[in-house]
Structures are given as structure tokens and as C-alpha cells.
Length: 116
Length: 231
Image 1 (cartoon, helix red, strand yellow):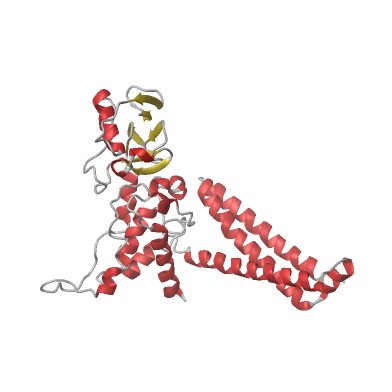
Image 2: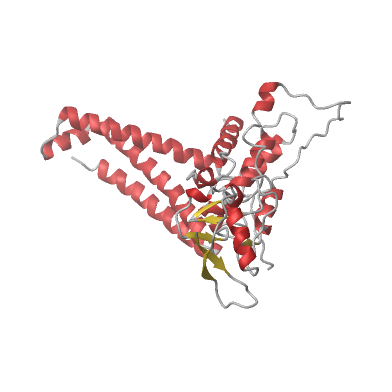
């Protein structure tokens, strides 16, 4: 096959926007955590356990973690696009990153909902 | 004044090297280009491009003490000695300070840098309001010297796919022009992970532009219009 530079994948904006939105979600969660820690002053395991036993805290934490993983996916993919020249190697690396992040997501659910 | 200049003649040299020059300047020598012309009088083997010598043609763009700029509008008094001069980074060197700008212009042409309007031309001219015309300020002044694009790491990594700041600035110049009717096609063309979205807003382009233009802002405005179109 002749070597040609091909562009025109017709995506880019959506991912760029998602990276911005997930960044805002993470920033809001970080502020929320700061407020919670400052007001509740959890000092020992029981306090932390009580905090994360609340459903809203689990949901907020999960939203934060999913935002983090989605944000990381776009960032890592951008790095791979810049530095990995072979399309085949890039595909394998990207699939690897997706599987890893999907695994992290499931693991996050397991951790957050197994606190009893 | 002391200079260290990148020298490379592919027909003679195995690899590039830095050559030192120490030259006497005349009181009338104010800009870096004046000094380079003095050096050229001593060593006529030095190759460089220059034409208008007043920052309009964009020929004498080079890497001056690590930062891209135009030799003709860079004041000698502002430069730390020895002044290190190198060709623009990221482009193939033809000889000394002369680089092959084909890839740069290829990207520039890829955004179709001309007005597209299929309507019958009016008798005199296509009218714009002063506000519509004002949007083109800070865009049309680009002289295509390539200082910005060759300062951009995204262009270094993907020169064949990423349009680069200069091309994107001009792309927005036509997207912003009310007389142009190909806005959708232009946005479609740039809606691509490589062509536009390799830009990560690190603003090297803004830092080096000898005309004081802001490609990062123009790229941001293209993104704004794309978002308006999408949501």
C-alpha cells in the first residue's frame, strides 16, 4: 500500500468537550471533598466509614472516578497519537488503555459499594 | 559583536555545526538582519533568506537565541551574546539558515485560504458592516513567516496531519468572514482529531509571533463555533 497521510476522522470536538466537562466535575468534587473534610473533620476509620456509607457520597465519588477515567482516556490517547507512529501498535496500546480503565471503573464500583 | 551560527551544507558537511563570528558593527546597524548582512560580507558562504527587511515579507524567520523571530525586526541591543542563530525548528534544512517550507505551505493551502462565495458578485463590492470587518483584525495580518508553526510541538510531531497555528489562524480568518459561504465545509474539514485538535493551547505560537497575533485565540473561536453548531 502506498504511504499516505490520511486525516478526516470526523471526531475531535466531542472528545475535547468531554475533557473539559470531566475536568469541571473533578474540580467541583475536589472542592466538595475539601468542604466535607473541613466541616466533618473525620478523624478515624469510623468517621470515614460513615461518610462513605451515605449513598450520595458513593454516587459523587463514582461520578468523580468515572470522570477521571474518561478524562485520562482522552489524554493518554492524545499522547499515543503524538508519540506512537505505527497505527497497529497505537491501536493495541489504545485498546489496552480502554480495557485498563474499564477495569478500574468496575473496581471503583466494587470498592465503593463493599463498605459495610 | 559575537555570533554563533548554525552551518550546514549537505553537499559538503557530514553533520551541522555551529560557527563563531566576531564582527564590528556600524552605528547604523540596529537590527539583527543588519549584522547578518555584515557577516555575509565577511563570509559569503552563509545562506539565509531575506527580502523586505522590515517585517512584512516574513522571509528571514529564524531561531534567535532559542526563540523564533524575524531577524529584520529583532533589535541587536535586546540580544544576549553570543547570539545563537539556528534555522526554524522542525523543518528540513536546505542549507544553513534556509529551511524547506513545503510542509508548512501544504498545510496552509489545505484550509483553502481564499474566499468561497457562489453568489453573483455585486457590481461594486461585497458589503460588510464595520463590526463584521472588525472581526478580521488580528487575523488578516499574518505574513506566513512560520515562526509560530515551527515553535509548536504538535506540528513537530505531526507536520503532515496537524494544520499548525498559522494555518488555523487563516482558517478562522475565513470562517469569521461574513462574505465567505463555505463555513460548514471549513468546520467539517477541521473537525478532526489531528487537523485542529492536536492543539493543546500551550501558546508557543502567541509567544513568538513577530506580528503580535494570537493563533490560540483564533483556534479557541473555531472550537466555540463548532460547539454552537453541535449543541
